[in-house]
Figure 1: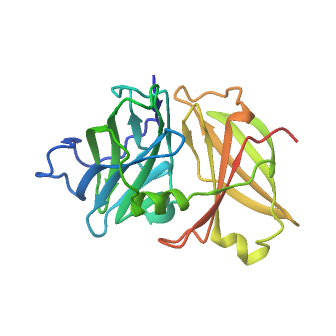
Figure 2 (figure 1 turned 180 degrees about the vertical axis):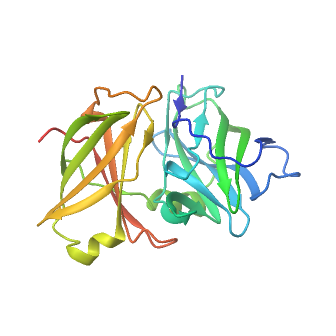
Length: 276
């Protein structure tokens, strides 16, 4: 089973409307169009494609960790054929205010690259993507999309996909150490991140985003403080049963967004956060 999912969170003011990848009329509110960009075959035999979501002016959609006010996207590729591995590549998101709460996502357009390793590189890949996601302006509308396409032949490079693949967080493994503690409805993680830059005013333009790679769940907005060259960031993980749990620190991923205003964000990504 090839699946990428996010936690369940309901924040909607309208019913979801199904949208076929082959029918571009009758788009839901906020959606200018959804399509698969077929991309190309890489020299190693893998395929590079992308899901493109065009948004109407003023509308936004969400990153894999959407923030407290966002709708988490869900991606399901189980209907696909000739796929051994599949990696969804998320471009650097931006932060925006939504009813006094911070959300993380994209505006105007989202190009979401997909790197596919086929079982048999000589055969076509049938990509079948079911995507449930939210779009928001004054209201939030959940949207359900099913897209499918046969990917065959060499294809051709696509600047839209290449640009999205270049606009990703910079990996910085080993930069953080974490402690965990139970709270009433989950587990709190506190990360000590070696980050000498950003003293004083610099941290005001930085956002720390926490997630579990293989077990997504609701995560609170993080708090941050400083001890010299160490940035201390903390967030609460709340599972569906709202109970404390044993958190796998090797599964933690922390993304630090710098200058997280719309269209101007940069990011680093820390995979794994061993105990202090």
